[in-house]
Amino acid sequence: MELVDLSVPIETGMPVYPGDPEVSVGPALTVAQDGVNVLGLHLGSQSGTHVDAPFHIDDSLPTLDELPLSRFHGPADVVDVRGLAPRSPIPAAAFQDVTTPIVLVATGWSVHWGTDAYQAHPFLTQEVAALLVERGVRTVGIDALSVDPTPAEDFPAHRVLCGAHAVIAENLTGLDRLLDARGRRIEVSMFPIRLAGADGAPVRAVARIG
Image (cartoon, rainbow, N blue to C red; front, side, top):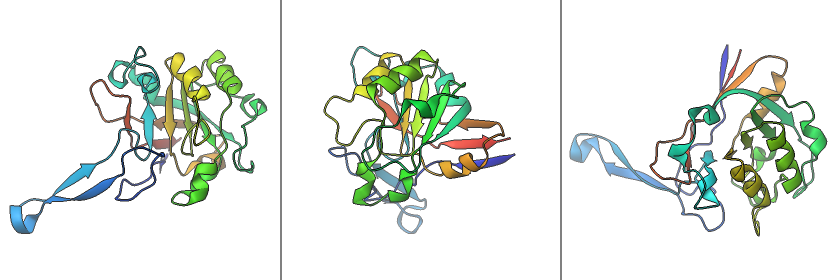
């Protein structure tokens, strides 16, 4: 059994979605002055590796704490779409063998983390998002800034997935290791901080290869 960390570190100045709160992490208390070390954190709910609840795009949809825990844990299929051009739609054919309710989309774009190129990632179309919902997928993760293009005008893939009460995980990393392990059972955990009434929250995403 192997555990693989799929999360980016939370740190000052890290990339965020355009317009989201910038991330700042620094000492609030120190052993030298206060007897203990405590960090002060300033970040948005969509910072780093995180999940989106349906409430993210519609006030009438479920908040993070209203979702079943099964949305954040279970067996996962990993889909290899590496090699696509910048800002390319991800083809429906890539998902023909999907059988699990959790799908991780490996674009390879995590190698651009921290650069301007990170915003030029491939994306899901509204039609592909609808196909995934039809096949029973209720959690979609991607190693990119968003499942929609960045920037997006109306977030069509978000609207389809969230409308089905699905969860979206973004800014994953390390999916290449899972691709190398295809043929073995892959189980993923992406449990969020328990924020009341939230649109989303950072996660420590971890895959178990068994």
